[in-house]
Image (cartoon, rainbow, N blue to C red; front, side):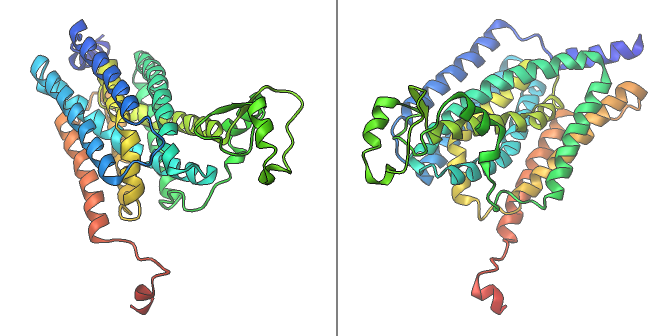
Length: 357
């Protein structure tokens, strides 16, 4: 009985029984943010580094505003849990964005169209995170062994990243073998070239395209009135890749709190700023050479935190990591990764100055 009470009491302590007002504020902010993002990036123009940086700051300020709302209306601990989950999801998303860069390069998506693909990627991430958070939070009722499973998933991800040597996608992968790519090609016939910013194009539109000299070797299949473009295939690959990444990010954020609203709101506010953060990271990728190492360290930390919580429930050793300590560790490791990248940049083997040295 004491073990059961310990588990329940800890869950209740992190779940303050959020009133409808808090839920309404979160949902309202999320919907308004999505609409704002859609309205302000409607044109097929590249997002500049300055513009992306300003928007990234805006999304961070918005998230801090929601944390302030939780601080005032609930408690400092609830705000700290939200910020820790937010920072974790933000940092773990860095590796996702590096993969998205490789996907865009393989599909040869122009800069002016990447934000369109990312917008639908964000929509998909919001939906699938909600599903995964509901499943993950529900599984925790089966006891601490589920936390041990989550810890194993997170640590395994860190080990695989460590074994890959921090390779963030410099070697081009053949995404034509990706499961999402092959499945989409089975659903729709595919036009091999981009057609503006369209995900689909009608057969009658392609009849005119076939008259162009560069398309003289292309023949349309006899069946099919609607053809998918490479942009749609790119969206499919991005969506499925993000779902696969969620298998480690969701357990990581659940390690911070068992309260579904804290977990989901932290992830959603982090995801909302990903579209503009992508363009910041794309510009700074060559300089943030040690950031992925910081992500690996954080994954090991989260795995250890999950295991510590689970073993405390099983063996009552009394050791735990409080929310404020978790927040400082996450921010500290992230800061070390950024500072190390500035102080110890990787040498370019093709640089004649480095060869001379």
